[in-house]
Length: 613
Image (cartoon, rainbow, N blue to C red; front, side, top):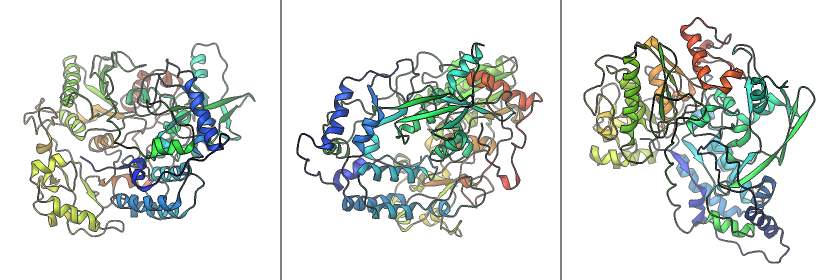
């Protein structure tokens, strides 16, 4: 129940821009570039059908050289006056972001660079761009610089093509998980495992040191933690499990954005090199029927009707590709269970979903999680590893339910508050007229009759109680701390144990706290961050509402950098077989194994970023 500022420029530009007159002449450059794309797509080969199915990949769309698609985008006309109007409207939405002041002047514990969102918006609105695409890219990069998965914009010209490097991906490999890794091509790692290849590490990318080049790219990703952004670059089974990123990593996919060049040159330490071409495919299923940049603008940036709801993903016939066979799983592989050895079970929570069909799918997920715990206890196993690698978030009720399964006697502290403005104050007072059931259906924290005070576990009776009289936090007025009314939001089809149903499955905790290990690769957004926070106080979540650590309500959680208890680098076996990552984590935690030296945190809860893992 979060109010996300996720905007599509296409819908707003529909009323803000007028279609320019088409340019005439059969040799018009605009017509030639986009017309060439149309022609190439009509006869282009389809994507490699062996690529694993994820939300970031397609196996049925034609692909063309990326330069042609980029040339077309760079010709889409820009009108400064209309764009400035759009910025003015966009600013009204951005004002709801809870961390604007803190992002501009973050505390020392924040692990990313400061950014003035509103100031940069004003600058973009005052610039005269050569084309609409460059304007859209600047907006997209600005929002990404907040490193907040609930603050985003996806402008219309970025929603036409998806770019990616035509390659199987790169990896970062340590010989033993403790020694500093080097960068390699994934296919070389596969070949070396079979003993039939002598491999060389990557030295440079496009004439720049490889580590420096990849660090520059990773800074543009959404994850808050620098290590998480670094890990996104590489091919990983976790991306297949979580379905949020391209399985070959974001060095290959760059979240679908143009990587900056038509060809990428990768040079190895043995002096050899390889060129990788950038390819493009359509993001949508409709054919590309535009013959000019003006027609592209009309077709993609001025829709005449709302876009249809995207189809729900089909269930998987088997478990997660590349993982062992699970003994329990839900049809979408959001929660899967594995017996690691005679004393340990692994529960992979790759997604908290939320938009599946049927509507009671949360009940299915809850039953699978319960089944995993029951079978673990029945088998005599006493340890549990929770693997949240690649989890992009989802439904709050699902992570709260798993928490209550594991800790039936604990109340989940999941407190949030928001940045107060005249608009939020007025909306809170107006929405205060709703009764709790009406407020629950609205699905926003501003409807406070569906919220409770986390310490008192009681309702917030008036708008003044809700808005509070808190002193300014890091330079901005904020609301009172509040949380979801768990009894109100839980139901038979969307259960939270101990609330609905009132009775818990286990009278006491099925595992000792010291026998539960939470592991991940840093990519853990939204509901996943909330889950990890209440389990181990490791991560954070933000958006319209900012989340907080219990007992530390003086700053939002995402500005409180916290190190994991142990860090390991990926080995070749870890890269090729996810089971070995669980074994390594278990050994480091319960088996006397070592962690990377200096990896367990430094003073004030922060730590230095080590960019080679």
